Image (cartoon, rainbow, N blue to C red):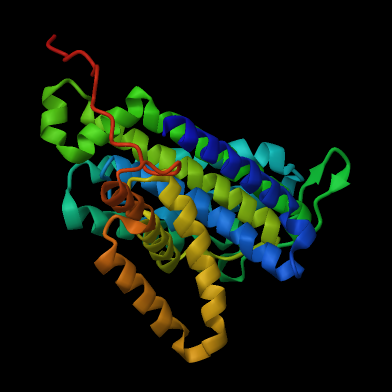
Length: 337
């Protein structure tokens, strides 16, 4: 059974990889490729949120702020100093990560719904700064003329070519997140999420890992921001408002909170569903809301969580099924000095 599942897993990975590489060549038009590119950016943000919220239990609705910091870093450096995306990317990740860590500091003092309110307030504060600091951000008018990247002399001047940059970032982001989850950092996140008092008693530095989780979330959103700025060539403060953080939260819940595969499933499903429902115009939001409600009510573990029920019902293990949460094996030594 194990060999069969492993074979199916590798076959699916091979077929999926070929489909992903060939997609821009067979896509019906450039707009559909753009939608998939946006889905990749949403997936990156959802992965960051899942690590902070799904694994570490940190409610964070300041995603728009992190996203905006990454995007404005790329926009300002590229339009004013001609800095390429390959330098903007690490700088955007660094600044967004620092923003995530700084925002996490006041979050250490509150819990539950107060935590959500604090993150919303901090995100709105950063958005107001983007609107009012006209000398730096051009205010509500935003920044235009952001250049698209250039790869070894080849201009990445269309959605089809930009697709491969987004794809590489998503694959690398997923693999890094997977390593974090399987590392001691991930086990500490899970221990804090399940019971922070017990984790602290076992020697886990709870405050450190909570700040780290939000910093990692900021880094993922920073990557998404840099990609978005160079792909769209224009940004303005309204793009990074709170509603987009809710959209990322929704796709993470629908895909599966506490599951990296859930971020991928939700990040693909919701943007595509949004486009399909656009055909019914004013009923789009109704259909979208009903779909979310059905998933949340009848699939509390998200779409990926269904695999657990299939496993239990059939006594089988699907290749993409979620692995059980690892037990904390060796925590940090308690500081008794």
